[in-house]
Image 1 (cartoon, rainbow, N blue to C red):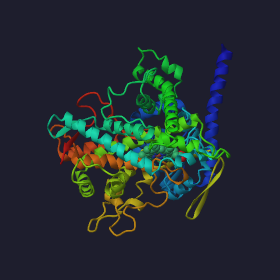
Image 2 (tube, rainbow, N blue to C red):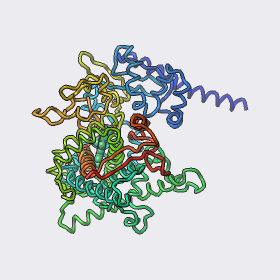
Image 3 (cartoon, rainbow, N blue to C red):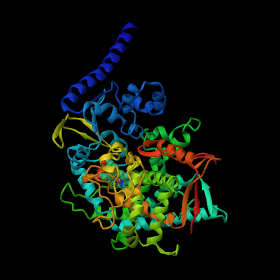
Image 4 (tube, rainbow, N blue to C red):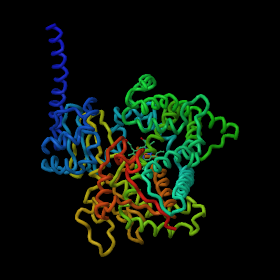
Length: 587
Ligand code: HEM
């Protein structure tokens, strides 16, 4: 017995000493870099801590002294949105740098930067700053893909994808979005029982539905009517439809997707979480079979119709890959497993990002009627008077500059990916005006988008109309006209300097879905605002001021579940749960 205890004690001591060793090593290496150091004797990536720390955060915030909490919070996933610029102001600035700090913990060294020179440099050197292993582990589930690969393997994916998401796809996305948004308005018309308005807490689920159906139609070539319940049934041999399996997989990407499939499929029906885990097990099994079937169907169709591709991502991807030159490793066609991986990533990367951006935009329109009126001016100016006249992508999208400015401002303050993570395998130099830093090998780089997008030197007072004076914290305010340059400028919209605005990342690995997301967002709001307006619903006798505070608090009560989202707004059960909006006819 004593020998078992002794062995246990030795094991625990050995395990604990690895933490001590890594902390000391990190501290020694960190000191040589010249960046401010923040010391935290914890490993932010230690799995048990990662699991408990997020639900414990509010308790820790309430019970720990600020001087301890301000460090501990840096190990909790999603801290960037809650803490904003505080760690830079409170911990880094006293050490002489307001834009960078190196987190020395019992895990890897982490550089947290909001320095635009470093951001621009890191994003322009993807060969030196690679994708993070930890994220790849989940996102590789259905095959190697464009997001999780580096070097030549990534270049092969990127070459195929670059040619695929083109203007032809943008037009399809625009047309499909208009169809879906009109379907939504028809449903609102029916639900309003002849009155001209409805009050609903389902608007956010509708944002997700639009995004999913656009990905299905313009992405996979499977067009679905808005009211598809009952229309879409699982194909013979399947338990779920394609979009059901996608929804289960995507909703669980930030956790349960890691669980082994045998565990999910055999999860007992009496255990808590059954209604999520069992369908997820089925989805993981069926998603690749669905995708393979779609690929086979498309290959057959293209053969029968003489090789012509259709205007959807799947068809274009297949054509681009099959026509790649076979000679070199950099341009060889993608295997079916790789195509499947890319199709999954398009969905994973495009769904939540766009849907959550639309959701924040709904609340911001309700919160700021003034900016909604600003958008009505554009909508009424650029769209045909007859609300039934079809919208043409080529004629409409380039003119919808205010609507696009509105999106850019939503993304500035509610960026879906609060950080862009990279890792340096070997020591790397980083340059800022007047200084070169050396980053030790195996440092993780986090580009912290939240303070970057609130830098007063860039955003304060930008494009303020004549006669208006800037609020002293203007960069924190939602003000979409900061994006619209004075008339007569060479560019209609403000073009941020390199490294200052990166909701879609930047450089060679910039999001290839950027234009697609913009087109979808603009098409949603042109279609809705053409005939309808969105307002908040007051709670009882609530004054306008109190209601605005409540809306602000709802938006601040957000967390990162891979992408930033408001809490308790999706899938709400009761009539009075979630957040109610009024959607009413204005024309
Ligand atoms: C508002 C909408 C969107 C935002 C804010 C967004 C943001 C981003 C960001 C920040 C990255 C870089 C991630 C990293 O390097 O770790 C990225 C990459 C990517 N995005 Fe998006 N995205 C959006 C929409 C879309 C859409 C609609 C698609 C496709 C249908 C898409 C496909 C991709 C792909 C394939 C990559 C990987 C590119 C590469 O590594 O070469 N995204 N996106």
